[in-house]
Length: 73
Image (cartoon, rainbow, N blue to C red):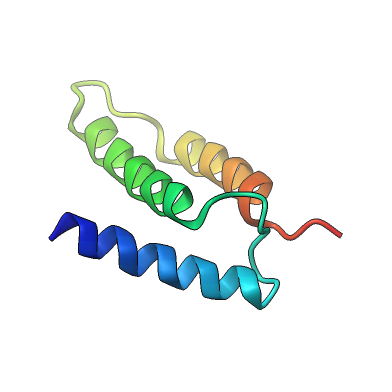
């Protein structure tokens, strides 16, 4: 089941790359797994006794995603 989720995410990412919406610099499957990993990281951060500040988390993820998926011109 997890493979099917990875494959579906990777396929969507590959389509977006083909349309120029996401930089083709990274493997679609690797990017799909990364997206799931940072989502799980958010959950783990929320479960901590001293949760991560949501604004700090969102700023970090925004910067990472900008670097990863913004098409380079």
